[in-house]
Image 1: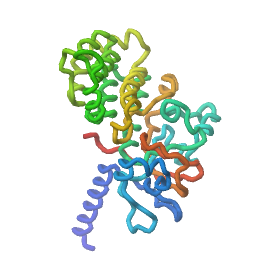
Image 2 (image 1 turned 180 degrees about the horizontal axis):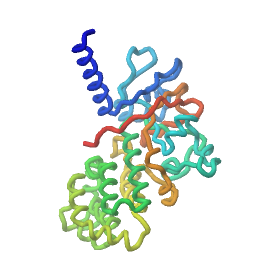
Image 3 (image 1 turned 45 degrees about the vertical axis):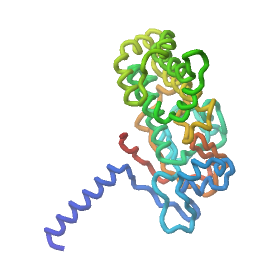
Image 4 (image 1 turned 90 degrees about the vertical axis):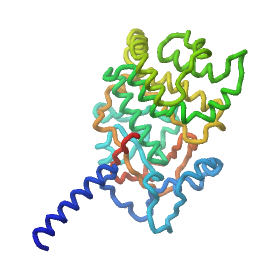
Length: 328
């Protein structure tokens, strides 16, 4: 190959590498024989999964006889707060992690939604979107616990990863039609409760009846920015940091889904932190990573509404890290 062609080839290689990096792809290991990256394969035998039409329809149908791997969105992922250790030692259950001490101890969500569910298993997200939401939420939670973000900034991030209110439109339709008092709908009460959490001002419950509150996530972001001083004053004066604000907001959002799950046809967007703020503050942000997984056995448990599958630790291997895609 002559010098010109060598130069062109080098430029092309660099461009390809840059494009790969921008797309968030890493140098993932190839799964060994008998291991599969497909989330559909991992959970397709589970009746809870089969009963959820929205999940069955959204995941790419895949089986080991297919020539091509499934789309990157429809693979198994795990979000860790101890990337180097997991890459070196493999995944461990919460029971195994809780037996660790000192520098070997890692912190994360604290376990399975609002309770310490399935501590002997390892949780995996069944799509990249869910993994990215958890990844971003953990990073915000750590910064909130360290007081590295103002309360209103934490609130904005929470609204964005939850997707309120666009992703709650079906619940909104139901609540808006439910009149709980003359001139007051259930949705009015929901909005009033959310604003009361942000500002600590119960008067907002009544104001929700008269004011035209935001109806998109972008509008809520602007509303929060306009009320930043009020929100920051409330949380700075009464609380050590804004970590609790995440919990309080997610409780409000989560209640909408828990009360009327049939009106929420996608994965629950709440993350459900249960770790203390003191432990979250100890997390090394450089160690928070999305891991690509492969499984050699089907999931032991499936939690469809959380887009989560749970495996025995010995049935999973880590293929490498995945960079989150840029937020739109």
